[in-house]
Image (cartoon, rainbow, N blue to C red):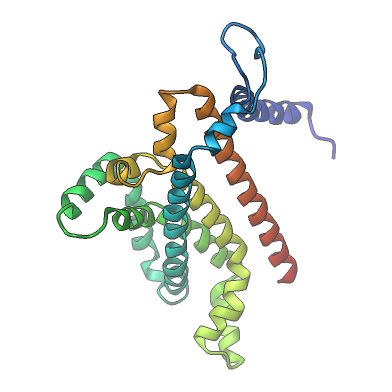
Length: 259
């Protein structure tokens, strides 16, 4: 069936809307000067060399990865079994859990940060751990919805009943039957959660910004110093997320073929 022309027009407009700002950022990150002319006056990789030559950038990138990966991994370990248990064994609690998780959106980051500072500043608990906990709560809606939809799509209740009738224990059925089938959805949810956490600024800046500088805090500082370096940071961030997305797509594709 031939698609109408306006379909291609709409897709093209959306792609332009998404790609033009990114392309402009990329060009600005490799330009010498771009103030008074339509195109840059020259091109250079000096800004990238300066960026990667700065130990503060490498350290901030590592800190961001530690926080984002740590919170995402914690969510995977805790939330996936918990959501499975709710969907399969306690479906009556789903509406309550959904309402509880949606409340995450009701609290602005600034208010959450102020509350966490008042609660934990004198407790002796590292604010880095508090930030990981706040990140864990922040990504609950994404992990919950993605995992729940995956469980619904594979009819997890029926699969568990069939596995148990064949003699499998609940743990064995979850590990060998349910988990491989929902893994593509779980990985996509984890990627979405990681990308959101990696770009988060408000919480980390207020809670640990001065003592545990992440890449977003580093970017904020560089915005006032050099637009070229700030653009290079944004490009590096986009490349990292793109590489992770490609890896996740490959993993999910291979798992679907295996299943």
